[in-house]
Length: 67
Image (cartoon, rainbow, N blue to C red; front, side):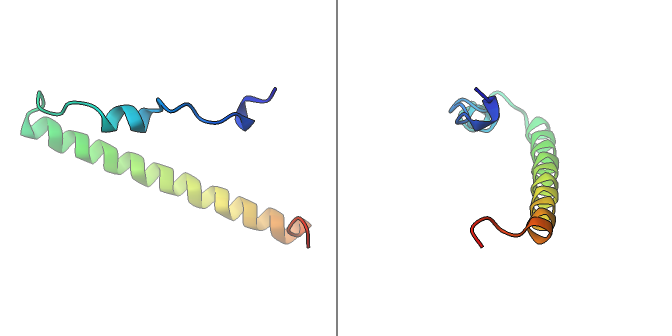
C-alpha cells in the first residue's frame, strides 16, 4: 500500500509543538523560536504555492477530471 494515501498521524510536528510547555524558555529563546516558526511558515506557504501552480499547469494541460 502507498504510504502517501494513508492519513497523517495525529502526533505530527505541529501538534507536538502546540502542546509543548513554554515556561522554561527565556524571552530571547522565545523570540528565536518565533523567528524559526515564521521562517517555517514561509517555507510551507512557498511549497503550497508551488504545488498549486503545478496542479494548475497539469489541469490546464490535461483538463480537470470529470470535465
